[in-house]
Each structure stands twice: as structure tokens, then as C-alpha cells.
Image (cartoon, rainbow, N blue to C red):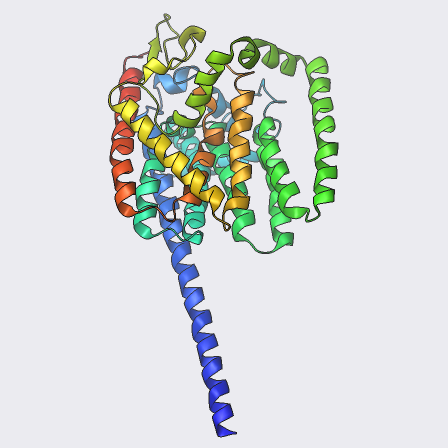
Length: 426
């Protein structure tokens, strides 16, 4: 009996030790992910300031300065009382994001002049949400078994993404980037279906309320993770498609705003120019990570940094030198990780949502949209998510070899964007 009691005691001790070890490991992962997220918040703040989002600069005086962004108009709505002309495109943007932005403004006014406080509050709100999304992706990477060195190299590359030049701006793109990343990670790392469902329902409202087309990703996640029966999923999809198309057609014919936006930016490139659409497809997968040197559209009073000035289409020849090498290295990394993620039983089921989201945006922006790169934060997080899913078995040597040309080309491009922006004074 003493032997049995001793054995039971040993088992209990080992169980308690194992549980304590798991709790310690989880705490370590959470802490490391939080540190990466905090670094991301700081980086987005530094980047937006570096790109001249400061009181009195051209970036805060008028729209369409950097890749067709509307930074000044967004801040007028969040800090000021301006009404949005895009209420159906961003239906809940003001009720969701104006209160926290004004709260930050109020707090910062205690130590800064009001004008500076307003600009910093708008930048900080975007940085907090986008940075939180980075933190969630970092936790997913650790949850997937990536080592510290792997995480550091990958997330340096992610923070240097060219698309972060627009994600860091005070506008809805960085907010959507963070929200969609969180929406992707939550069902993977949270075991409770009930909690996951609640978060995804909230995400449907917040993502769709921020930008109406982004409602599709949390809806797809809700169907995949909250409806366990395949038959119920099929029925939900079968009902959602005609309902969504019907609502879109109704809004197109009944709403002058939707009619205007659809008509003005409708390109139908996929149907009218398939070869050009193929080039845009390559840009969809490459330019968010490594963009080429931008051009500057010269129109008195309306100079703009752009990859498609005056609706000039994208060309592959924009990539040359170090940026071409970096783009190729990024594609090697992305395709390698995608292949590994698809072959691994642990990650295979998680690949299809982010990959499908990228493909949806590829098709959508080959039909509609005036500057592809402006919208890149909507799917740049998915590119990184797919890399994370397949990077576990990559050697540090392979990652280091990829990291050097990718990071070098990313830094080069960010300085090229900065240089182009400095040539615009009004």
C-alpha cells in the first residue's frame, strides 16, 4: 500500500510539474508576442511620423499625396465633426472609431497642443490596432512551434513590408489589417467554440463596419469554425452567396454613393486585359512585402506618390536591381512556406482561409479599384500568416539567406518612398 501511495504521489507530482511547465511556456509565448506587438506599435508610430504625418505637412492638408490615401479626410472625421461621403462603404467607421480616437485626443491634450494631440491620437489609434494584429500573428507563430530566431527574422521582415507605408497612416487600412489578422488567429489558438463564435460575430460587425467588403473574411471564418456540420456549412454558403449578391445589386441600383464608387473605379481588367491582370496578380503577392520604387505624378497642387500615376498600369519592369532580387527572395520564402503548410497535417486546414482571402482580393482588384497598392494592407497580413504556418521547419541558415536581400530591398524601397514624398511640398 505504501508503494501504491508513493506511486500515486509521484504521478500527481509529475502531473502538477507538467501543468506548471505548460503554464510557464504559455506565459513565455504570451510575453514574447506582446513584446513583438509593442515593437510593432512603436514602429507604426515612428513610420507614420517619418512619412510626415505631422501638423501642417502636406499629408495632413490634402488627400491623394501617398498612394491615393485620404489621411486628412479620415482625421477630419475622427477628430473633427466632418461627415463621411462614404457612409455605405465604411458604414460604422465613425461610431466605432471616432470615440476612442477622441478619447486619445483628450488625454494627449493634457500634455500637447491640440493640433499635435489630434494628429498623434489618430496615428496612435491605428498603430495600436495594427500592432495588436502583429502581436496576434506572433503568438500564432510561437503556437505553431517557431523558434525565437525564426520569429525575430520573420517579424523584422513583416514590419518592413512596403504596404506598412499605407497601413501606418491614420486611415482605415491599418485598422482593417489588425482586425483581420486577429480574426484569423483567434479560432486557431482558442479551443472554446462558444468564445470563438462570440469573437467572430463581433469581428463581422467591426470589420464590415470599417470597410464593407472585409465582412467576407470573418463571415467565412464564422462558417468554418462555428458550424461543425459540413451539411450546415454548405447550406450557409448556399444561402449567403445569393443574399450577398442580391444586397450588392440592390445597393448598386438604389444608392448613388455605391453606384458612383463602383462606376468610377470599375476596370474589369480580368476580362478586358488578362495579360495585364496577370501582372497585377504578381503584384498582389509581391508588392505588399517588397514594392518597387514609386513614381511621382506631377500636377500643380496635386502631386502624388504612386505606382499607377494618372491610371498608368503597373509594369513588371518597375522591379530592377536590389528590389528585383528581394522580390524573388520573398517569393521563394512565400512559396516554400505555403508548400510546407499545405503538406503538414497540423497546418493544412488553416491554409485555405488566408489563401482564399488573397485570391479573392486578387480577383476583386482586377475588376475594381484605382491603385492596387493602396488596398494591400487588407491582405498583407494573410501573406505573413501563410509564411508563419509553413516556417517551422525552415533552417536558420535558409531564413538568414532569404532575410538579407528581402530586408535590404524593403529598406531601400521605404527610403525611395520617403525621398519621393519629400519632393512634394504642397
